[in-house]
Image (cartoon, rainbow over the protein chains, first blue to last red):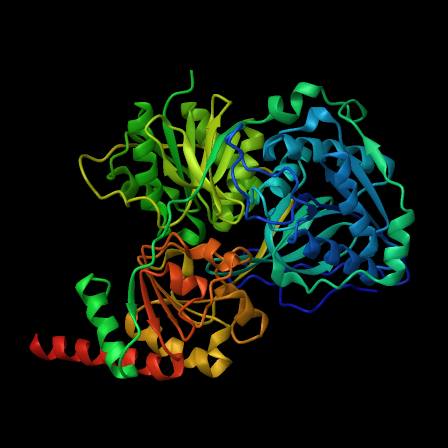
Length: 296
Length: 327
């Protein structure tokens, strides 16, 4: 069996060897896939807490980071593509973040792990990725991991770097902006990466970290069976000590940056209005203004 | 002690990118704020050939990290090359672009060099702290570094481009061995059409659900062509299959910051605004004068796109013709 959608993988100038697909005819193969997800505020329309000068998140319901739905879907699809595979959802956050693990189970993920404890409060991407990498190491020691899948970024901070940083902590290869997982077996994954000027094809030795973009799939809604399973699911819960980390390596003290304060963006007052006259008159008026402002 | 601002220019596919000079502009601001020298590193297969261009733009020194294995962007190899350049000068800040490659390189490098990272920086404050948007651009964060080295990736089209000025700085070749890589670059497929890249465009014409279908986008493309603009789109237009995802502007797509952004038939959901609200001049064309984009636009033209777009295209063509005739 080959899990490959055909593409020409030869390099035009011949400088790279033509990659032969690994075939697994008559052999069993199964993957272990981890999906890293985050519990984020369900609204991004937040005020500023006058006491701290930071975003006012108290009382805002938490939900799964919308970009992580694509990562979960991709893991479930890989499991469907490679029967016998297992999937694990992993999150770092407060205990209430275990709700996003339930969401993952409802969407077809097999099990979940939450890394939690007051020592993780205030982690930036640098500290959070260290915690994730330590948890992945622990999972990997128990049952070898092939692929770790991430969403594009989070809806709160939205730096889009945690997946790559996690790969770096693990010293595993990483790739971002993945729009398609083309071929995968237990040794390697071939992905299409969406660049500003086109599409790259890369082949990564496994285990590896892959960060997705929304073009990769269309997430399905949780199934009834999944929802039932999610209600009964029990999750492993790990602290920094369980991961062999010192408390000062994570949270605020382990972070490389400090958020000093949040401010509102400068208001953008409405400007000129063009609403009278025929379409031709309106068009002429607009072009007049654009020429006057040297924009055309 | 860490000293110096190191701008890292990742020259993929053998060329400097549009953002290279902006990085030097951002680096200059940091160098002035922190009163430290500005340095640059060029990473790529032909780094040596590209370094002289950078050396003449107000930097004190350029490190050229060249190797055939750096023709295309591979995270570990580029991070190793960037770390080799940083090892030569022990900088207090590293500046990269917020592109796919720049962001990934910054992320990988932050772990390799054990340093804090702030992405999508839109402003550098006089004391060296930086600002970036978060929560879909609804809030602005002010960030400082806790580590001796801080890495920033800057938003495209935000900082002034460094001009060629003054004497050329010294260029130092940095030897670099990528070693065995766990990532193999297989191939590159360029965009089929020679369209202007959204992220580096000075003008963007974007269409939304109000365009009603692919035919509406034809009118939009006509306008984009006479303006020399890149074409953008809202999520709903992309999800409807009228235009490819790579054109999507907003939270789940690209962030743009052009001098002129013309939004046609886009109501202005917060997710879209997050990707374009920093544009210099925003023109909205919409029948609904009360929608968010019409409210926040620098110029709001109330009308149906099908009536107005062809007239605008025609008017610009007519005036360009008049200018050409006069000349």
